[in-house]
Length: 264
Ligand SMILES: NC(=O)CCC(=O)C(=O)O
Image (cartoon, rainbow, N blue to C red; front, side, top):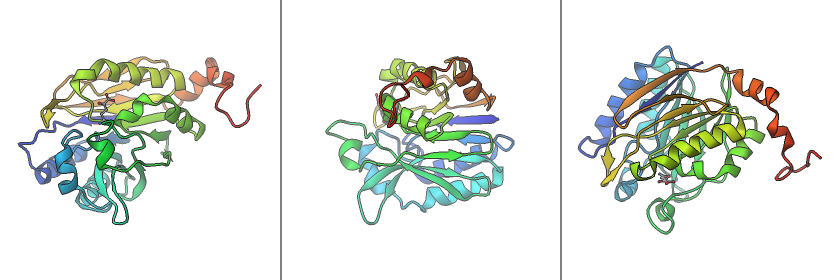
């Protein structure tokens, strides 16, 4: 299974419309991959709070249109990162979109843990409440977004729902890059799952981004890691590896807490 993570540079000297078209071109260039992944809030930048309201779009808005077409043109499963979603009946959400190779929306995930404490995303956006997994031909993905990476119980919930591969778009800042790589490895090892974590490059709203998109296998081995600039990581994954790892080292079977029916 071939995955491509597109670590987009998000700089405010490029308009949102131009970036959408440029990114669609990059997705089309990944024809031949099975799964393509984009970062969190790459239209605005995850820290460009002041533009969330102005750039918010309905679920089936301009990013949806352009990315659905790019997925079908490339014939790939596309995790198109997240958009600031305007729900006509409610608040804004930080919503990830996953398209099938025919360009249909296969899943949407509203970020559960909003970042910023009492500022920024945490006050501008509503919290999602539903875990999302999706069966692709070769693996079951579980989706999470950026700050969610700090909440291991979310990932355990995704494992319980069948996830073998976590797909995590992000806009993680350079200042806490050490946490990003540490937590990506931890989520892979503790859940015996692949982690595909795709961040942004560049600087937006004065916040330098970490980049360093990373692919970690179920043993915690880093299969690929980007630098800080715009970059595309392409990796070949063995879809059987989460299952074989869980068989060979069955630590998940020793869980005692947090299960509706304890195993012992
Ligand atoms: N966009 C985010 O969720 C940022 C998360 C972050 O900066 C952190 O967890 O640290």
